Structure formats: C-alpha cells, structure tokens
Image (cartoon, rainbow, N blue to C red; front, side):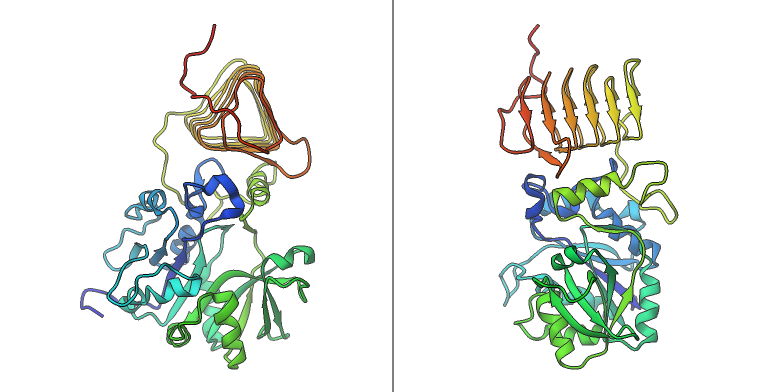
Length: 394
C-alpha cells in the first residue's frame, strides 16, 4: 500500500460488464448498467448512490461489454460525490498484463483480475454488487450484520414468488440465518428466498478462494465451494423494494412502479438516488396536451395525450398522438395520430404518423427501430427506418 492511499474498512467492487442479452436491442450498443430508467436515471445510479449513502467511498466499476458510454457517464464520479483523492470511483476495464490477456470469464474472475485495485486499500471487507438492479439499500447495516456474526461471507437475500425463484440463486438457511444450501438457478427451487447478487466478504477469505483459477463465478463456483468447506456464510434479509431488471418485462414493470398516488418505489425519497443531470431545457406542455399519472423529463415537448407513462429527456409527442402505459426513451418522437400502448420505445426512435405499436395486455412490446407512417407492431420485427429529421411531405 502506497503512503498516499488510506486503508479502508470496506470497499465495493461493482460488476458492470455483462451483455444484458435479455434486454435485446436495448443493450446492443450499450452496457446494461448504462440503460436508462425512470426518465432521468441509468441503472448504475442505484448501486453507486447506495454506496455513497452507506458511507462507502471507494468503488471499482468492472466493465467489459460496450464500456464507452458507461465510462463517459460515470466520469470523475462527481454527481455521486465519488471524486475523491483517497478512493472515489475507478472504472476497471479488462487489460493486458504480462501473464494474463483473456477477457473476464465470469463475475468472480473479473474480481480476481482486479485484486491489485483491492490491495491498494487493504480493506477488511469487500462488498460485491451488481450494476443492474433497482433498489435503495444501506450496505452499512449489512456490514454490521456481517461483522457481528463473524462471517466469512454474507449474502443479501430477499423473498420472491416461488415460481420466479428459478431465475436466481436459491438460498436455504437455518433459523439463525446461517446458509445451509445454495443452488444457482435450479429447475425446482427448494425455497422462495433468493440471492440478490450482493455479497460482503472478509477480504482475506475472498482472496483465498479466488486463488483457485477454476473459480470463475460467485454463484456457480465460489459460494458452493465455501459452503462445502464449512465456512461461516450467513444470509442478510432485505425487505425493501428490489427489482432485477434483466428482461424487457421487468424493466417496464419497474418503471410503472414509479407511478400512481403511492408509488411502490420513489428514487427521490431520502436518501436520494443520485444521477448525472441532463443539460436540457425545461419541459414544454402545449395547449392540446393531456397528461395524467406520468413522469415527464426535461426537454420533452408534449402536444398529445400521455397517460400512465414515463418519458425520458427530449421526447416529442405531437398533437393527436396517444401514449398509454409506456416507457419512452431519450429523444424519441411519437408523431401526429400515432398510438403507443404498453411498450418500451427505444432511444431516438420515431413512431410515424398514424402508426400503432404495443400490446393492450400481456408482456410489453419493445420498439427499437423507427416506423414509417401508419406502421403497426406488437413488438416483433424490424421495420423500415425513417430519419427523424427528414423533410415531411405536405
């Protein structure tokens, strides 16, 4: 440890390198943690804000897939008060070393390849978090639980519907919350308690198990290996709002949770979820506009009807257009007479005059390619692309 770097009690390693293939075209050119949410946020805002709000001021962000936009968004870390001399936020992409040249082979392998960053601060504990979940959590409470129970590793867990448990790592515990079993994405879950992908390790134990080159993933390899060795693993029960937004449907539902008189989740509540502010003018609402139960971001120009929807910055809704129960990403446009219902419309897309997209019920549609006039879609295929700025026919 160099003289100008201060030893830390706990640092965070934020996993942000996954492809997010289940979000389909939304992540074709964007890292999953950089995907927009709630009109003004990116997914990575939530773990970064949670770290700062928990008193954790040193965060390594492990990137790999499409890192440019994510790294530019994080910048110096100033919006999250992470532009520190000792600590702060550091983006850690894969690198070529004297002995290692391959890409990250999994979540644990990504941390192993960046243990030199961990060693800079000699932390007693290392927090492992993901960059693609929507939640507000005080990690200091979990750290206190970890220390009190003399754990080698603590897993944050939450209860889900039993039919959804197969999507996660299923955790079995005794009455004392000591972990007795862990099964990564089992076909037949034995419990409705699942791992949130948030771990606190004693740093020495973490480094010990990462010394095995065959340990590539936390859920598939490292946690089962520690259990088999009889290590003290405990589950920390979380009861607040949490969503894994790994699919189009879950991302849409998380956005819908922001609406209503009593929203299921409000990022503006204390402690706030912080984000990099958009440099856009204020919203403009025209005389013909009708807006109910919706979030409208800066730079939007609204002349049509918007109901039960979340609009990101720079969205245009022309007169006669109607948007219902939908999420509209940055700089998209819904032209005169077009209808959007129960859909996610991607960044910069144009829904042409008289077009109709989305589903009245069932899973929401994803529209990521612009539609020509009077086009229709239930979220299926690609459509003819039309430049938003082309001259309209008169």
